[in-house]
Length: 446
Image (cartoon, rainbow, N blue to C red; front, side):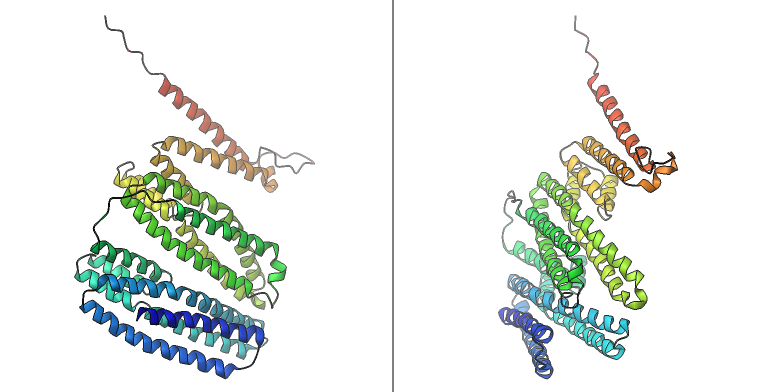
């Protein structure tokens, strides 16, 4: 039955892709035939869901927890292409409808398009809920077997109601079910493949935004605007899948006690993410500025795109903090750091820029060199402030005003703070090292 449901979802992905190509590129005008096919697919999905519901109840009564979890995982993974194509298409249609209405060219048509898209979004959400049928049965069975507590049961049920999170829950429930039926093996070192995959995904995102910036004039045309929705949508879906793999890898490394590897994973991913977020903020800043500047002339669509992009950017940043959270958990469990530091680093990991500071500091703690890590952070902040001051000529006259010169120099306030921070850090480090090396010479025994 799980393969039947997975096949229906894959068929739905092909269906939506075909309808999109035929509507926006081939323009055959067979709207009625498309509507009949889409309605027929939804009816088929409802029938299959009823069969899946009966199948999940039968397996739950038979105590087949592992089979239920496997069914859930297969269905959730098969649903990913369907929801990628579906949500991308519906987002484009919503954008198209709001743009029509905002420009005033066809207020009635634009409103109708947006209304159709809203109804399709609702049906898409219902389709997502149908893929969670095996998940609810798995949670009930795990609770009955005593493998998860009541709090976890409620948490998993709530997460199954949300896109993306439902895939993560499917993976976690599969792990719960498999762990209960096989003896716990001895922890073995895990490879570093997943962190390289996540780093590669971020590098791919950097290239994507660099191309968007380079070819912005071509992508804003009516014929190519779909690229700006489809490509980022596919990339965001890839990030979701990779994040699920990262969560599984991080949990496995926590159990295996691989604190060093977790700290290295977190630092590598955070450093690789820096160019991605820089390019990302450039694009989103332009979208926000343009949307605000032409709000009365259709900029609302740009503002919505910018807001959605900001939210997705923050979620992407959180996905890069998974290894950091796992490292903090291991360091706290090993009593390397106290509760106060653990809470502080967790807070830092939820904020842009300071999340990189948290990654560097937990890496230093994992190597038992937190002092060196703090020195590196302070020096890096000093260098950044100094460079920012040199690149900010508008602030140069706040301390020194040189007639006939607009060069910021090193007396810019930011540069002054940066230089003081660098010099102070170096001096304090040298003083501390000198104190540690001046150990008292023991008296010779007579």
